[in-house]
Image 1 (tube, one colour):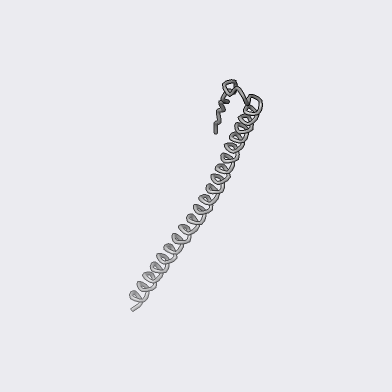
Image 2 (cartoon, one colour):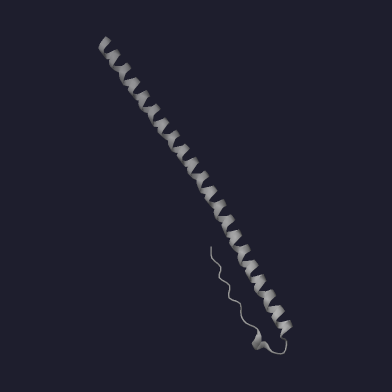
Length: 92
């Protein structure tokens, strides 16, 4: 009877250890998922900021070109051949 009782205690202890190990693995996976989501959110914020800056640069270049064109039209209202197109190189 003692052997049976001891064997059951060991089996119960091993089952409990297995359950605790599985819980620990689940908690680790949940933490990894949380960190991954935080990184993903931060990357989105950075990309959104880069897109906004890109839009502002393009808008500024277009505004400068439009202003040049308008000045050219006013200055050379009769002779449009004297207006040169400006070439702007935009790099990111």
